[in-house]
Image 1 (cartoon, rainbow, N blue to C red):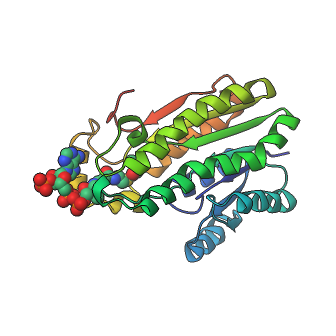
Image 2: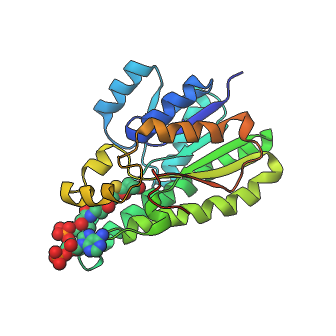
Length: 240
Ligand code: CAA
């Protein structure tokens, strides 16, 4: 029977590409989304992948949402924590809300989703968790103390949980995307983005599918000896 994967933020951008890549690798996929119902509906119509709306920053919503997916689709074997937001501003203009929302959703979401699914993976003796970090969690980024802290936290979370999952057959890894051609990156002012692209040795933005391919590998049977690692996919922007 096909293994079951849930992808948070799985109906748009990098998450959409991950949902599609996992499905084409033989997984049964469910996609979570946070609020863009119109896009989620179109995604489900085109791909046939069911989509489920809840806020990954809400602990109880993750417990209830995963229970619903398990009741309707089956036991969750793979969690891809992809959902994330930006609230970019220099520190002196950043509000507490800007800080808290990014921590709550980007980092808290990983904890909430794994709390809802890890026990089942342990009991069944197989699981994959892939957390989407960021080059900006590795190197820092002007205007992103909130996002860089949350993404950096994801990398620590990954390494700690990998140690707990290993003896139960549950691997936990991260990918660290660079600047990818998505709505999130297109919100960066063009002159700022041009300066960032100029520092990417490969000389262009990445494509969502280039991240999805890495995630699909980490979710595969063949990646059973890979745990606690971070796969950087950033065009050479940061060599870590
Ligand atoms: N290093 C040093 N100085 C910088 C700088 C940098 N990287 N970027 C901007 N500055 C300077 C500017 O030159 C400017 O200085 P002057 O006033 O002396 O000219 C000053 O900082 C203010 O810059 P802005 O006019 O841009 O200020 P702002 O308040 O309007 O905007 C900002 C600040 C919101 C941080 C804006 O610069 C910005 O959006 N930066 C991009 C942040 C970014 O890369 N976000 C990534 C989003 S995508 C993502 O996060 C996905 C992923 O995982 C990779």
